Image 1 (cartoon, rainbow, N blue to C red):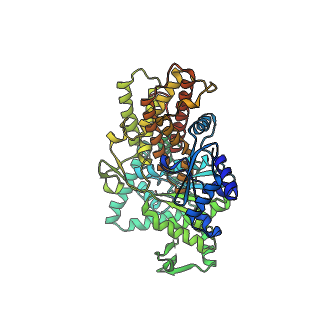
Image 2 (cartoon, helix red, strand yellow):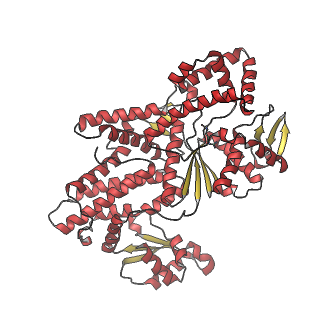
Image 3 (tube, rainbow, N blue to C red):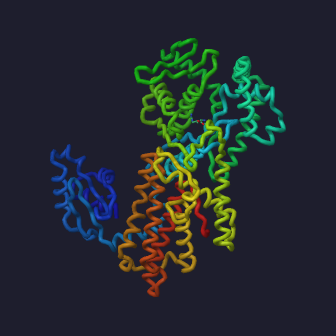
Length: 561
Ligand code: ARG
């Protein structure tokens, strides 16, 4: 349909098809038609007011057989496709394998730096957000044909490991660390700070041990590597629950032999300044605090390793974009890093490096953060969700097979959906009743809608090749469901452009709700075979669209729940 509309406009307006394709929109509301062509951009070359241009083009188009009508509204021409034609073309997409996909990203690479927990610290709910958002962006960009590198930039290097080595050597026991993992490492870390408040020489010892790490001392590196392995094992447990993976675990330590080169480059470019014994890049001209590159004891910091990481990634993958999904509190950090990269003569930094911030998580009103003392592990929340779903299933559907696997999909799906349903910059509030409400605007509701579709198709032994009569499903609920589904390809592109998975989450909810309206209004399993088959095809298309859009969020659909 879209191709035909493009063809019609490009003929009438004497415009390039690709230009028409770029401009053509799908209106946000059904009463504005199926497609809309905005004429603002043509005003410059045609030296005419956009509404006049729209009227001209509409007149040239005249009557066309696939159109019910076209209407000029301000600078737009709105196209209303004949319902039957629209239904036919939409139902055909039920058999298209990659509905919503595109090859716009062909040959291009996107790096996504996300999750990235800090070794020896708990994987908290903030890390859960970056993991969920980053994973969804990975799915969305992959659907658009991009090659995506999923990078876990673990916080596995820095002065804190000097402290931890001191604490372990003084107060730690191997068996405790092996038994309690990250929790024990956190206890040792807290103990270090308590003791260092009383005895400052501990801080010197810690600096010494981090220097030893940076200088390659084997004893220091062995202990450190052990801390990394223990932590990573726990994080991987969380990823397994989520069903998520990475292409690269390249933490900060990966760049430890690459920071010297950054310092040299900055120096050669005349960007490095001394300030109280430390080395910095002055960013006053850009209204930013200076970017610290090297402390006065010669050790590098978080920012130095991020600078090395940008250069390394650009060199290795020649990315079109590199996205960083972290909390808002790192806004300045990334602004500084991106600016310094640009000042090194890399103009691409301006468009290619993107910080993607997100809001905080609160649990029943109370803030979840390690600083407030109540330590919350993401893994515990996921497990609790799975547990709670299992309880519901056991009472409501005791005969269901694979209860554990279904509970995992639904419990985790509920958490993911709750996270992605609102714009990422908004804070996420977390209330169990709300997250797990099977009738609310939740993941389980959308999954349940999918299961209903799947069960209808199973019971009717749906045959995708059966004869259908599109003229038979022209009633409002069916058409409006089809119109919702029709938006999918554009939804995926919008979500990518705005780095906003919520666009997809909202869409899946719209489709689920539209489906309910259709299902309540129209009986699917009617006597008349061609009507039944047409409606079944619509059910199949809905199922497929729900499943695919949820998969872009990182949510699996069970077939029954
Ligand atoms: N480890 C950091 C944290 O937990 C996030 C790292 C983000 N990525 C980066 N390249 N700096 O806050």
